[in-house]
Image (cartoon, rainbow, N blue to C red; front, side, top):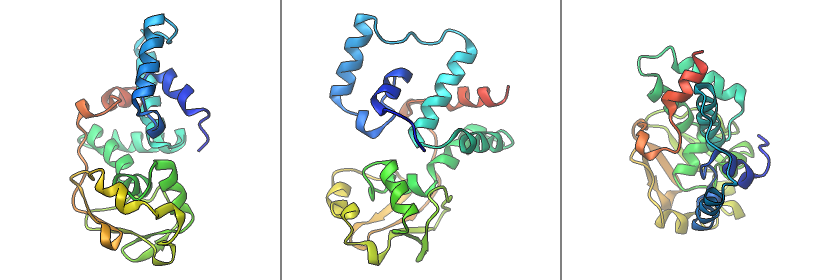
Amino acid sequence: MKTGPRYKIARRVGAPIYEKTQTPRFAMTNSRKEKAGTMPTRPKSQFGQQLLEKQKARFTYGVTEKQFSKYAKKALLEKDPVQSLFRSVETRLDNTLYRAGFAKTRLQARQAASHGHVTVNGRRVTIPSMIVKENDVVGIREGSSKSALFQDVEERQKGSSAPSWIKVESSKREATVTGLPTFVPTEAQFDLAVVLEYYSR
């Protein structure tokens, strides 16, 4: 999905939604622009706020409007729509690869999956949007293990921790889905309850 200049988009929505913008330098630049009054003001209307939160969430996961709308409308039919929407985007194969440390960014994870470098339960897959389920085992295909994409996987995994719903086995280059992700508002850069208000209009 083409999104345009990532720094520009992140500044527009007022949050470091891309991996490359999650740096002290970006935070400092944003802070200076806010003090100087050059940052766009936060939308005051209810619709404007809903749109902003939707864009934050959608750009974070790098999904198209059509895909995100599908997830949201499906979630609205569930008992707990916020958790349902969160699980739909978090358990995508590309995001799972990123969370497990097999890719530096979600974009890189999406490329790895679409190019057939990834397996799910031992089978080669090429669909980044595939939803993984509990007990699924995601791994790097043996024939792709020496690819430049995965050269620093072990080092990267040592320096970060996977979420509680993923168990990583670095030596095997595999990750097992051990549960379901849970949305915690205070840990997110977007408000999914507000996002769902946008789609329930």
